[in-house]
Length: 112
Length: 113
Image (cartoon, each protein chain N blue to C red):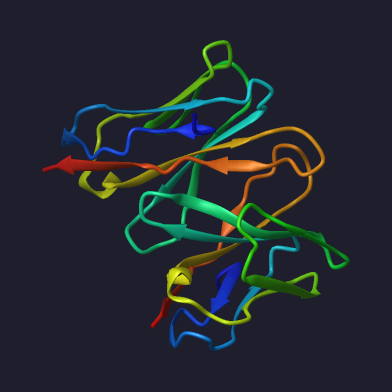
């Protein structure tokens, strides 16, 4: 089982719709969770971080965390063509190194 | 100016050559990382450093070495490049604390022929 799993996609949604991206992780003691956006050929950039169970909203983005189910998701409301990118889920585990493990990413396509 | 810079941005080299990828940061972070990204495999950690005197291997360090010349500089070397080291390489930095996120440089695209 991969430590951080994401559906590779592509996930296609029409412009204006809600895009839902999902991520599961295997380490129950993970503490910090991140969503990065990566445009093709570019570097990952942080969109959201979440540390507690529940929802966290930032503009059109909402991160949802359920530690009991080891599940974190990202919702993008009013999706725009500029949101078309690969979204990476990252999970940080506690300990001396505080290892960060990245998922392989979900490719999102927003259709105009 | 970018907070995390990488040079070169693109590099083509031949099998057996030694090459160095450089990373500099102006964020004042202590922690620096080198990753490689391959299609379908995601980001994989090569080496990381928590300060100038602290260097640690990541999950795929074979064939690579690093040097932390200063707090702001972290270099990755391929001692004898091979074709399966063709990849996109990213440097990243983070501050201290359990919730600090990583900030990535623009990447170096390396092709080993």
